[in-house]
Image (tube, rainbow, N blue to C red):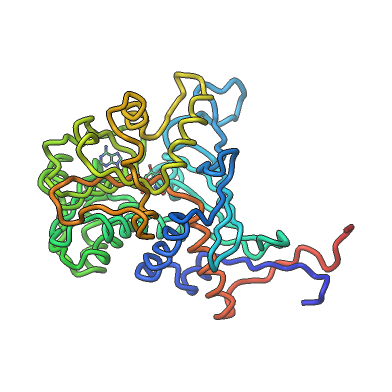
Length: 371
Ligand SMILES: NC(=O)c1ccc[n+]([C@@H]2O[C@H](COP(=O)([O-])OP(=O)(O)OC[C@H]3O[C@@H](n4cnc5c(N)ncnc54)[C@H](O)[C@@H]3O)[C@@H](O)[C@H]2O)c1
């Protein structure tokens, strides 16, 4: 590369796989590092609070123009910018679109994602990469990390609700994080998807996996429960189904009962981000507001839950906060995902690609047009 040429790497899905994007053990290790940095505060995310999940293109539910997409559950475009410190010291942006009808109607995944990394000092783009596997892996690895820090050491059973890609990544990570696990059950409204989940997970991880026909059966009495449904239904996890000491770890949406929240450890991936969701959500017309975990915010506002009792997973990972791991208190992990997780795993893939000579060089310019 000449001194004035500016080039960056393009990493396709094949390059990402060759770089090691599907290595779940490594991804959990990197997520642990990312959460410790986040727990200490060595990061900046987008928006005025520096803690925004991202900026969404929010299509109206009834568009007034021909061709404009219609808003709805899991129908969105989203940009997630951020800076991650520590040894990473890099900025990144994940840009994706989601259409819940993609698999059935177009033979495409629900969401299609791209990740960009930039040098934090010069802003020079380092890489643009395919990010479907990257994003799913980091989501699953975070769920696995929650199991590592929050599940009881004697956890033997896992209940999985929804058998889509996110649940597959999450179940893989939980099984890796909890060597004590013996049995997995899965429930999906689409029984074929649940069967495919059993075949894939059972073959890959050598564990007993079976389908259950009712949502309740994937929850009641399980030691660890994870759920990642998409679409417009939000199931209610009844408190009485959730076993003492169990972990409910949620990369997807869910309803829980107030009594559950009053008595459980509440551990978010980033509480400041949850607060920003509320600030941003309140700007939408009332009928279009979807604020994650609004019930929890309301209980805090009413003084029924102390905000000071809510500790981020990063604070627990960094040793700044703790829980009694083998107690009978229930645990509730809520993850909406942060760009910091994508940056950590993306940077790891970029470094691996450089080392292995993977990807294509994309030249932005030989000489800058103007400085
Ligand atoms: N927390 C994060 O960081 C993060 C990251 C990515 C995705 N997500 C969320 O995870 C969710 C799942 O993503 P995906 O890509 O696997 O979606 P997907 O649409 O590919 O799969 C979802 C599965 O859920 C099943 N399902 C739908 N409603 C159900 C119900 N009521 N009961 C049981 N099963 C049901 C569907 O049949 C499907 O198999 C999405 O809502 C997405 O927004 C979270």
